[in-house]
Image (cartoon, rainbow, N blue to C red):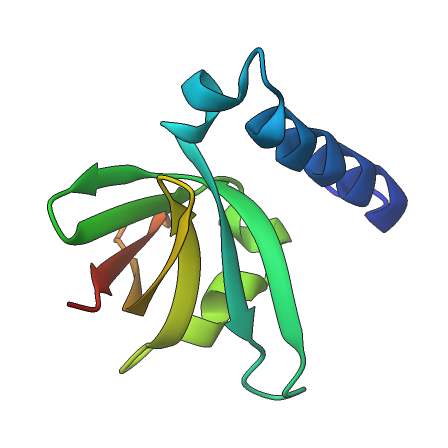
Length: 113
């Protein structure tokens, strides 16, 4: 399934706004964060909202519809650095993407100490 970039940008903007809203922000931020990273080929900085699970200093991001997205490929192989907002604070970490035998993609982030 392919969505026009304009639609994706609008939806992402709404998600980010929900995270900062006084009414819903706290609840939404428990499962959604904004990941910021540098593109491996372009060198440009990008930010995108993602759903996550956190256990201690490990964050797991499951990429929905990975074949229609490219951002997660920045973390294939040895992975790379990124930052994400957790509890209102930007945290750095090292992310590694993995695709399983069923085509599902998850990214494991080890947070910096």
